[in-house]
Length: 167
Image 1 (cartoon, rainbow, N blue to C red):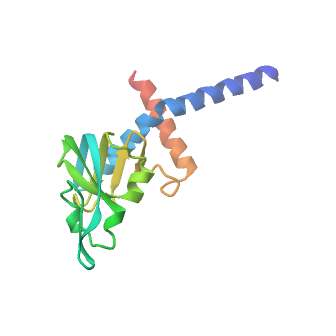
Image 2 (cartoon, one colour; image 1 turned 180 degrees about the horizontal axis):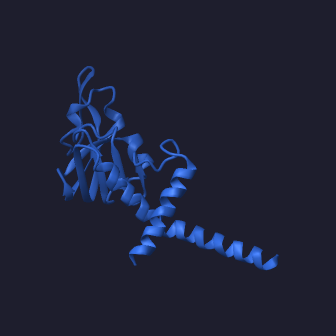
Image 3 (cartoon, rainbow, N blue to C red; image 1 turned 45 degrees about the horizontal axis):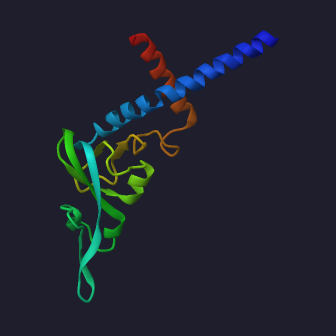
């Protein structure tokens, strides 16, 4: 009985360590698959984030801009503060910048300087798409709302088994 308990603990430790070892690889693979399903995709390195802010304010604000931002002008004044432009060096995809909602960047745990993979309908409509960086992913199907625990465990187990077969 004691040997069985030790064996089960050992198997549990192997599974948990494998999960944490392959989790970043699974996230990037899932992000690539998710971003590839959108017509506009970007991959950027050395990124920077510029917050969109209401401007043209005399006596009321009538437009949206950001200091150094190019795309903020497409947003209306009401939604302007909840968006930011992320730009950087192109490492793949179709552009060097896109607009993202602050909710999306916070879910993905984006930090300026991170490399990103993103997909959306256009460069100004990425808020319903995918944003992935080393910190996490928004819209990749890895979140609690996107799938249940069993689906996530099955996909990670499948990836671990496939990873062992390749080597």
